[in-house]
Length: 171
Image (cartoon, rainbow, N blue to C red; front, side):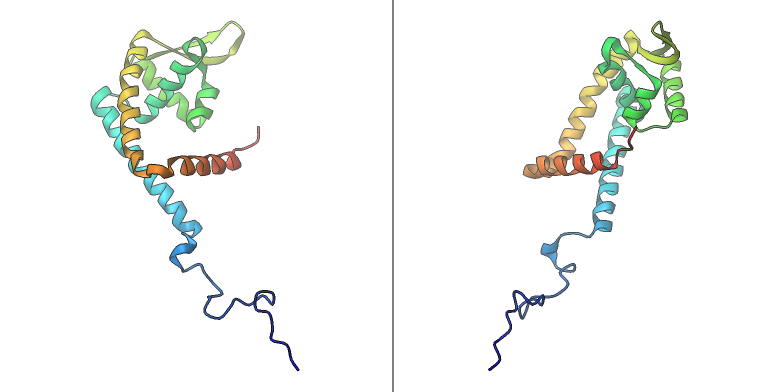
């Protein structure tokens, strides 16, 4: 007499359970859907914050991010390479951004005694005042926009940090 096959162990799902669950709502979004959502959220938040910083402080979001990194660096100066890495710009991109900040009197360029080959950006008094004022605009607007994450904020932040860490280029 034949024994009934154990459906839990023969690889086939039990009757009524689909083999391919990718289309089910509970299965979660596909990788392309997740990527699209990340890009959309980044783009929308970036545009909103950039617009507010331009209107209220005469700074682009990129300029603000560079100023903030300089302001938070020891002795309020940072090398061009460190700034480029911190804000995700190429060397020409950071040069262009720092040129605008120099033209606006917000930073100066200098070479330090320890290594005359490296150019550093140093915050001016005007730059310090501008970045302090812009920080509250930036931080308040970002916090407001991210309240939509609700109780999921820690989970989303942790997940994005893992992806970011996995995509860093080795030095």
